[in-house]
Length: 237
Image 1 (cartoon, rainbow, N blue to C red):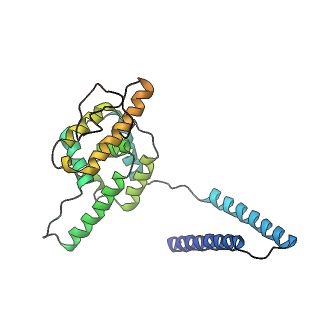
Image 2 (image 1 turned 90 degrees about the vertical axis):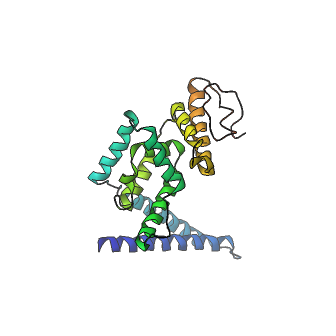
Image 3 (image 1 turned 180 degrees about the vertical axis):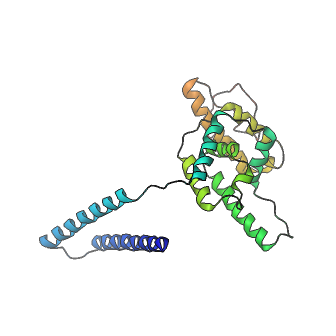
C-alpha cells in the first residue's frame, strides 16, 4: 500500500512539473501584457512553488542499503586494496560483459528472458567509466550479479554507488586489458577496443599529472599494446 501511494505521489509530481512547464511556455507566446497585479501574483506563486520544491527535496529520504548491499559494496571496496583475481578469470568476466551471454536455439523461454536481462546488465556495466568497469569486474564474479542471484534493486544500488566513486586507472591493468584484446573473442569486439583506449586515456591523465609520461602511440592505432615507453601524440588521434 505504501509503495502504491509513493508511485501515485511520483506520478502527481510529474504531472505538476509538466503543468508548470506548459504555463511557462504559454507565457512565452502570450500576445497580451499582464497587469501589474497579475504579474505580482504569478511571481508570488512561483516563489511559493520554489519553496515547496526545496522543502520536498530536503525531506526526500536517502536510500538506505540493505545489509547484503552494504556487504557487497564493502567487497568491492576491499578489492581495490587486495586484488587477487587471476587473469584467466578476469578475461572470462570481461568476455561476458562485452560479448554478452551465449544464446542457443534450444533455450527455453525462461532462459531467453534470463539472458535478455543479463544482457541488459552487461550493457549497464559497459556504460560506466572504464576504470569503474574494471573495478566491477575485479570485485564480482559473474555468479554474484547473475539475474537469479542479485535483485535489480541491489544491482542498481551497486552501479550507482560505484559510479560515484573515483578510481585510478593503472598502467599494469591497461597492459592486461590490451593482452586480452589480442585474443578471441575480444580481438573482434570494437566496443572492447574502445574500452581499452578509454581506459588508456584515463591512465594517461593520471600518469601525466604525476610523472609527465605521454600516451602510448601504439595503443591508439591497434587492438593491443604492451609498450611501456610512450611517444607524445594528441588524445583521440
